[in-house]
Length: 256
Ligand SMILES: [Zn+2]
Figure 1 (cartoon, rainbow, N blue to C red):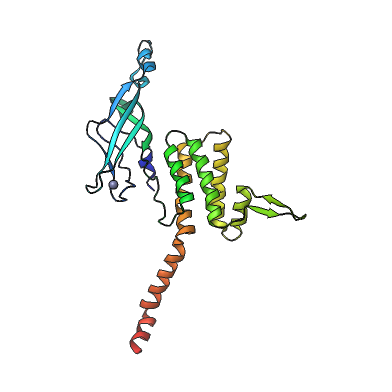
Figure 2: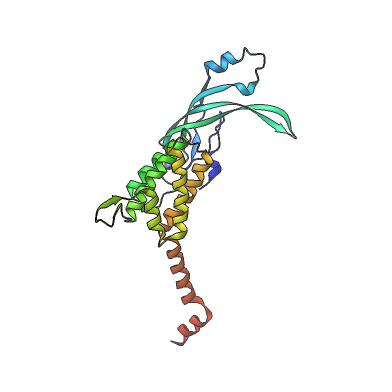
């Protein structure tokens, strides 16, 4: 996952090269002259203040981006806000430029590549989290929480537990991650960290975009391990190469 890509802004002639979900090979580029921006009414009124400075300016914008893979050509609509920033050289402002921060893109690119075998229940929640990433970090973290529940379901971690009196009680996400951690303590610890972030998101605490990117980065690796079994697959490949190519093995092959 390229974190910087999701924090980049547009200019009036360029867009961040987000990956295209439709073909899985191309990247989006700004459709020339498609970015249209207007200064907000608040921003126009603020110009009357004696303290006004260009970095008070706020814009709303819309734009189109298009996949650069000629056989795909997927187009996506982008909406957001913007403003004016200064170029600095050795601490001195030497010029200014307009920037445009996306809030929504539809269809939304995947912020990290989902494993090919990722179950739909997990993928749909993660894609909802991606769609909310720029506009509402806390809501995005909440969808990560639902994706974690779906992951626990996929891994067949029980949803309820029998107590001493023989009655069933519901297990919380926290309880389910504890159960999962018995056999997978390393990944379990990482998923628990995500759960703490999601708690902050659902209790109106402040979740920063970087926190959500941390969560996506952890989830990307956890899904590769739990759905694609990457480490086990690499270990098997390494074992195969060792058996085939280590000097002793080669000699034995020649002898027989
Ligand atoms: Zn494409």
